[in-house]
Length: 318
Image (tube, rainbow, N blue to C red; front, top):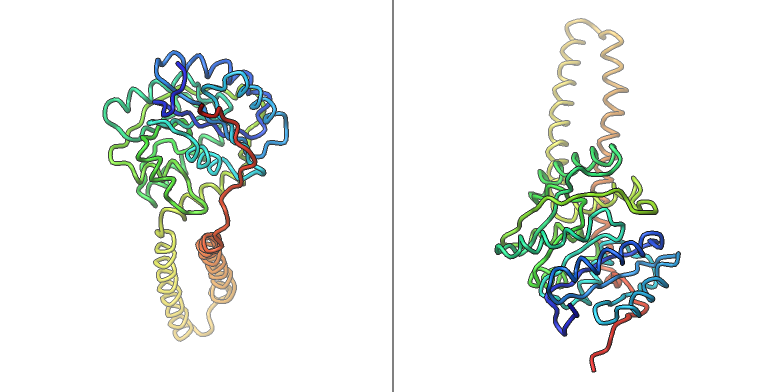
């Protein structure tokens, strides 16, 4: 069904170097949305791709201009900034985010919308039989548990970007002026009645994942430091604990030396080397943690634009 001025559904898809998978995405996405029987639009956001992705998106816009909009960045600003731009340009009463790699089938969008029909304003998804490398599954499970304990944001599968948002949640996210933010967690924090559904998960249709191990670590650092000061509080408590233990250890050393002379070599090593290296490591870790928070403040006070739009391909209203 064609899109109207304010369609019922907007699907926001960030794209970065996905020329190999885009034809398959187009072939499955539009029939899946047509089958829903509601008015819709698809908003593709090209995040500075260096392959033929922009050209393919232009061709798709020309093929389906009534339901397609393409936002072209002039550089690479990251997946979440691409989604944020999609939120800025979409018009739907409900908004679904979807990765372009087809690991989350577009045919599952209806399952999220059905859950929203029950009165939920935010619906996340849980990947069933996840088709990823073992280390990714284990790392994701560990970070999900750590994130929930530190931020109290309960998302069973934080790495799955197939999510549905009510318009009120999208507007609240748009009003947030944070430079760096994790959109699914921000949506959860604004939601009054969140829910989750299980969705199928497929192997990547083509190409390679754009998230390296380093980027995954950075993403989780941003998530934790962006939504909680608990790491700083825990480090403060840890510092107090280390000080108490160190003080107690020195009292033991002093008593031992008083009762037994200068003590044996083991106590000397503990006294001078092991304890010193341990405390140096604690201090360096603390400096890095504080640096994460200071860096976020620095990025925020610069007030630079979060992304720059080169062009927007859209059908103009008559």
